[in-house]
Length: 338
Ligand code: TYM
Image (cartoon, protein in one colour):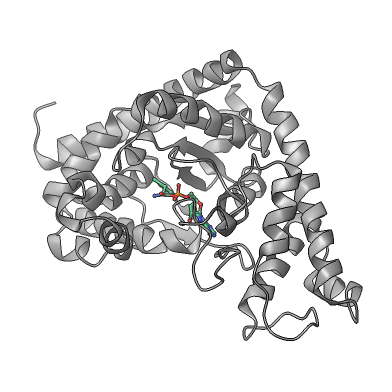
């Protein structure tokens, strides 16, 4: 990187975000988060992480996990994250994340904060809460460490992660108050139509890979026939006109997916299907999704393991340089001998 670029980066605001390599990515991950990262990378000093330490808060098959880490990195690139503009790295390659997590656990996070976290309550309630890992409970503090290590100003995420970013804000403020200005207090950033992509089989719950039915989600690797079937089976609301309204959450969700993938406005889409009913609308939506996924899948297949490992290695080097400076400052402030 030449000196001019290094100087420019100093003046740019910083953005950081990540995805867990714990299952195949789905349309919710792309439309709620990664799509926004792609447009932000030109304006921000951007860092995007594959958060493998978060993934192991629930059981993982080691062989599959190793594969998925590389697959998520390939997906970032194939979706438009440019390694020349954004830093891409794997969380466990930078030790400062777990170090800062432990320090925040001890000096900033309180049991009262953690017990409010709705995602832990939901996830642990699905299994036996007593058998949930301690890591799952502590996961939001690790996420705060991820964000705070890189002087992050803005965190582009879906709505389900906002409470965790709020915790990062609380921990940053608490640490700064006790030990002096150290961390930037980050802001979450959401998109209007993508912040909460809902399940195709149940528009009251978010699209999620851990849903019981595979008709809840569309993964980025789904084949065309699978997409057609899932959209055909997607629930719709009563009536037959294609109009956007809060009272018709199923249709609203399908329209959000359509507008985000097609560059057509909601108004244009409503006009296109005026008097034509759900059948035509769903057929065309399936084709819009398939067109997007087919070109994405081709790009993924063009990236070799070697190429992505090279990108991750140089990403880890840069992230380590930034994170080491911050963790040293933190250790010094809390009274460790440096
Ligand atoms: P994860 O891996 O569950 O999801 C990755 C991103 O996808 C968004 N998302 C959705 N957005 C809209 N609609 C949906 N149905 C939907 N499902 C998922 C998530 O909001 C998220 O932005 N803890 C985080 C990962 C993380 C992180 C971080 C994020 C770890 N450290 C630091 C930002 C900054 C998580 O588990 O996301």
